[in-house]
Image 1 (tube, rainbow, N blue to C red):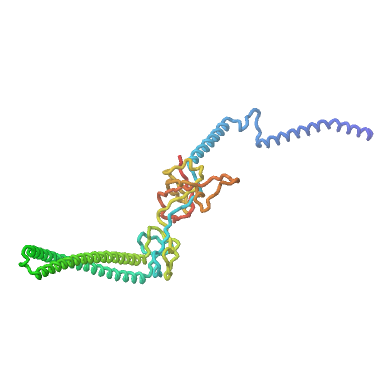
Image 2: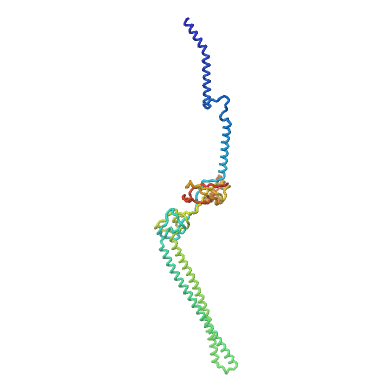
Length: 392
């Protein structure tokens, strides 16, 4: 056979085997694509007629139960949270007592230090008592003088009354003598008229002079009575003046005693010392602040939004979280609600009568009384707290 015929036979065989190879390649490609689909669906082959995992009844029931539990939990959380009104704009408040002296002087002793606990009546500061003691001695001497003057005035009243009694007695004798002289003069005149020879003219003149003299003495005695009464009035007025001066002297003594007592500055309330500025040797004046005392009575001032006040009422229980004591929540109750927003009591209140007014939700102070105070937590005015008011 020639070479040309052999080549023709090989070409014919290759043409006959080409469709088979092409069919094998396409079958392999389809197998590979089916394998990739199997891997993308989970790596496991699913038999014919087997349902999807998310379509199984157990999975659907379990998912429904979980969804129902989530909805129920959310509803319970919302119901619980809606029963409270919270704010973070709150702080501890107290009426801090600022201690100041009532007299001026030099400080000789300071018996307290910063943050020290004090009780009402404790001596905290002592001022030099030398000047006040001298003023007390002087006031006592003036009181003694006033008492002496009062005694003298009372003695003058007694003397004036004695003189009046003496004048009354003298006037009584003068009245009797004047009456007797007038009777003698009348008898002489009657006798002279009836029997002129029986009474000499000299006797009649003597009787007339005696009657006039007795009348003058009687008038003088009555004048002495009036003078004695005037002396009594003057003596009693002097007594009143002496009593007034004595009262003034006694008031000065009491004032001096008070000033002497004011040399010892006492604690007005129970509490803790804060902001001590006084030191030994300082010269202090009345009204000058020496230190402050934080009293034991503390409360919370919470500034709630005005739309939160709809459900807040006095007497509701409150849980107070203190930033300084995160491990302890304090029990409290709503005491009162201020009649007005906080900005209404500012130094410069807002003026809303303008054309560019923008409504802003205001804050209203609510006073919350603390029912118990922790011993291990140093609470004081200005400390931040977060109250939660149970409104339902």
